[in-house]
Length: 478
Image: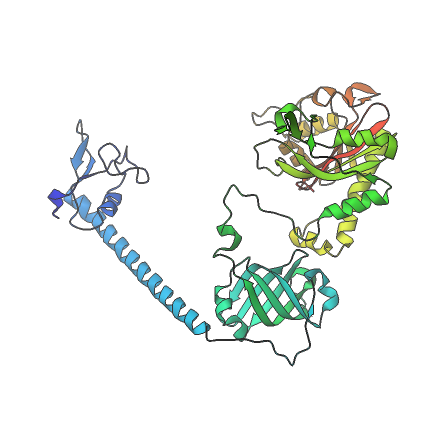
């Protein structure tokens, strides 16, 4: 088709857009190069550009077109070379896969029988032949003869090394992350200076592909709306539960469907419960309090729900909530119990078979040391002013205002030690919190803040000698 018979394409440096334009007079492209890309081939149609004086469009000058055409030709050559290389690579990979189908591996029956273990048992099973089922968490290939698989089985992570023929099979070439596998071999201590989970690696002598994951692994089936599970290994819930049981608390299993609100009506999930209005619980506080007279110190580890459409780590629609209630304690008792809870649980986690994971995920983790810094709300307000930590508009926080997460975290990170932020003003706290005897404007309340984490626990002292020893130790922030 001749250039005269083709639909003209319009461009405008001032009004056009190469991304959203379509080359029409109403929606022009910004550049002549984009107009040539749309045309696709020569001869190009008539290309218009910004006109002079009162003329909206003029035909592009030949000299202008010739200059841009050279760029367009070079671009096409590059694209052609790229497509050719991609075709060659695809053909080469298809050939390699066909060749790989001929390679067969089998278990060497002359080797000792493999003992099936979990990754967490790896240290005590070094230097003996073992087999482990798991999922390929990460895969790294180095040339044709070496492949590393970071294996995950729910109890931890293990670096696995595959050499030579083990890397040449069809299954090895198509292996994707999140595929399930069975690996045989011997766990060896790493040479000095090398690093891997547990300080050792599995030298594989045979392996089997159990189930192949889709290309791209989990990333290919998760979208931006998905909430992936972020924990690994054994949950700290076990150690938290052990702490409470060791301290003489009684565990309660409260219901998740309730007819009362705790935190306020705006965050309730409502439902029809056999003709009556009910809600998913926001907190088990009220149930725990009813158990106090018969059971004394009580706790629960249960789900809580908040109808908050937020994806920050501090606001989840559903989360695991650790809550406890203690009768007949003072505010000072409350602070001491919180300090004991945090230090003891951290110590239990680090001493558990999964303790190494803490330092692998956070090499700079610092064990919280007692005593925690005890800072009153009024002192925090003064600290923010003295260190020029302001609101977004540049003004300072004043007494009686809530301190949001960001300035609170800045302060905690600067001080760089655990802080028990105490005695918040009554006007920003719930009505049932005990007032401070020394200043009735304040409440006997506390938030525990950790550097690089933020708030992990909220506690209050209530009237009638009842203290909520902890309410708010949640998996999202612990």
